[in-house]
Amino acid sequence: MVKTASVTDKPIQIKVFPQRLLQPATAEKLLNEIDQVKGVIRMLIGGKNLPRKVTCGPGTGTDVNHPNMEIIHVGDCAFELHVMVGEVIVEIENESAKEDLRKACERALPFSFEFKQGHFIKKKATLTDYGKYGFKSKTDDSINLEDERILGLIDPHAKAETNLCVIGTEEKS
Amino acid sequence: MAYKPQYYPGNTSVAKNRRKHMSDDVEKLRDISDEDLTALLGHRAPGSDYPSTHPPLSEMGEPECSVREVVEPTPGAAAGDRVRYSQFADSMYNAPSVPYWRSYHAAINFRGVDPGTLSGRQVNEMRERDMEEYTKRQMETEMTCPGLAGLRGCTVHGHSLRLQEDGTMFDMLDRRRLEGGVIVSDKDQVGVPIDRKVNLGKPMSEAEAAKRTTFYRVDNVSFRSDKEVVEHVQKVWELRTKYGFQPKA
Image (cartoon, rainbow over all chains, first blue to last red; front, side):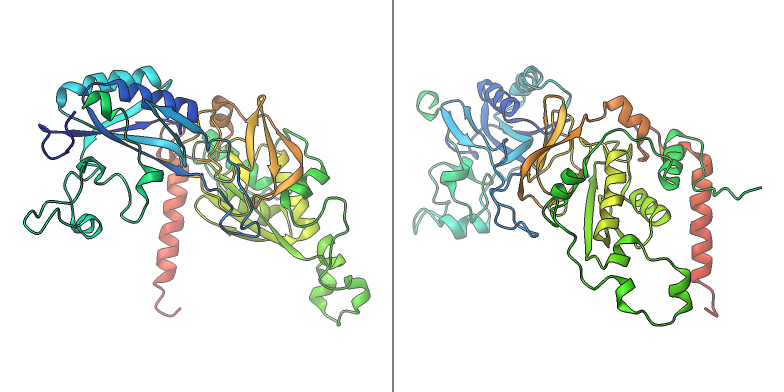
């Protein structure tokens, strides 16, 4: 698999928007099905925040212990869900992977879903990214990142270690 | 002939339900004990006395006032209870009550109310024991489905979200959840754990919720399908606009 988003043929982005908010088991199944599709470059999970503690009102500071804050396994990666999954944005290498992706979603989701194509994650570095990562060198003004696929996947101030998973790079590259 | 209030126009099921809510002609569907309700509200320990903010009115020696003589105080006001609140969030996916209709229900059928109405939630302040009576009425009747509505003192997020897979409204603080076909709650309305699991009863099925809802939705009963309601709303809008432009006002 290529390591930069910019050199891929013509990547397209799809937003999978299920009719219901997903329980961790369904989310795990969906993400694994998507992971199996050939041509997936990256995916971004979005949903409703599950806080660790009550953040306002008289109960501020009380532990929430939300049962949906589970550890799920996608590919060879395990991570804790911080959201109740409501949408998955998937970037694929080209149009040919689109139908496989739709079929993967149909297999995983027991209800209907929206399947929209559009521009949802940024594809090239912006000023904020240059501010965070800098240039490669004085003579090379490309962004100082080994893998450009992480652009747009996390907030500029968020830590990559807790928000990002790199799945199966060894066998695929 | 005795006067019969005409609460709301329309012939659709939604209009009829709205009339039912306003007139308090609602069906009781479940039982919630006083102690459980007190625990859910979280304002005082279940079984404890009502804390008071002033002595009972009978001991205070009120000034001579014709209005005070005419208006009988509510039990909470007479006892000097604190003012406390309860707040409901209702899912737009056919929850039985629209926040506005909770307010209408409170204002028409209870005294000493101070309802605050927002798009997805409704808060009501009353004297504590009056508020408990009012909250119990709304929770035990068809005005509330435990799956599609909830007692949420804070972090009310859920009204406009898609439902969860199990058909219940999203609750960020996990105050209540579906367990064995019924909704149970083990936290009070602000997310603090309580010493019991309160059974809030079975959630309504999709068909039942669609039948009992007061929400107009294009995928159930659309607002535009009720000509009488549209006419009424347009009339109110027109009169309000004309009133607003009174040059002498």
